[in-house]
Image (cartoon, rainbow, N blue to C red; front, side, top):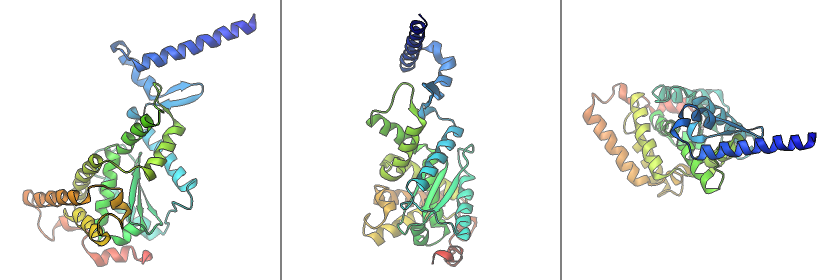
Length: 293
């Protein structure tokens, strides 16, 4: 009898969980008061599940930290952080200057230097931005480097990694009514950082918002177009730069960015040598990154 009662209890729980899953898949107006709380985290068989489209800033930062630990841990040998204090502090200063103008003040932005000669940068959810030593050396000045960091911050602001995560989870058949568990989110986050380039639409959005961050921080408005032009010319297209190969439509984007810069100069109080031209001193920049040379 006791055994049968336990079975009935277990079947009842399973039926209840199934009913909740069905209800989540087809929400009604009457559920609106409590549905958000359910979607943010459902405890099923001891595993926390999340609706990735509804993550709080705190959740996103927590997953960003877990993705970061995975990137520098299990992928050790592929991603090694560069830890020279002078260079790292300099990159952090630039990043914080740009992030001060972010539309997402609840995010704690973090900046890291990757010890890698390839010209590349990337960002993950939750405020984590990574810049290769190769890209730092390739930039002519601080403004050009800031343009790349601003572009990556923009991806975080627009939650592009989360959008990619939703798409990949759907393609891989991982999406369920309850959402994704934490381990799935972390593994998808790592894969997206390395294996899935942003769409042209995401890149255009990041260009526009990155340009806004760049100019609000006082950097020269043509720095983004200038750096992309240099990389494209040196590589003969997209082949010689990881940054360009994972950021599609380079020539078209350069034209748009240059137009943005020209319009900004025409429509603002911009004058050469003013506040808007910080970061153009090449010798100052080379001194700041001297340990790399």
